[in-house]
Length: 142
Image (tube, rainbow, N blue to C red; front, side, top):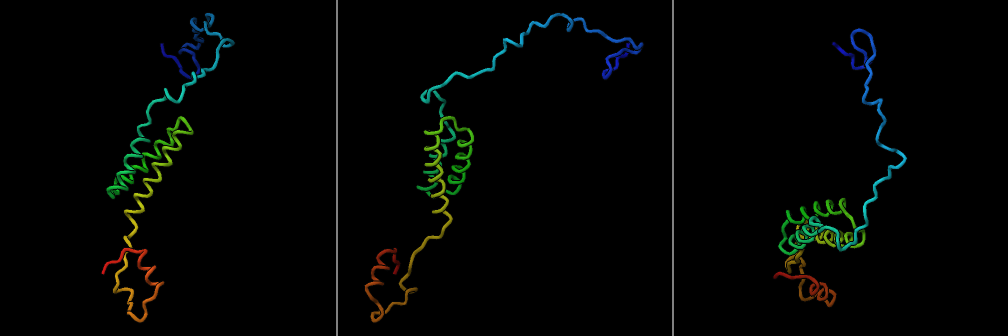
């Protein structure tokens, strides 16, 4: 016996009746309550591994000048920020990790600055105390 899915009628044109839906529904919509998760203290929250990895990779990127570690630290910072559960403690950890990651990228990608004495073209006649203070603030390579 062929049944039309859209109309719910069989090929003879007679309507199909579902006897199971006619029986009383055991669910009671008036007694349904929305689920409210129980409050969890900050000490009981699971460890934020992405935040920990972001800090560790950020420090590694700064200390050992690894570009890959600094980039991975930024990625883990974003992941930790998206999955943040406790605003105060997680935000401090994420901001610290982001600062380490940015410091690592800045120290890796900005050129090293050093002044050579030959580029200053200083002679004994043109040398003054201003030049001395300027030279003492930079690393000078003879």
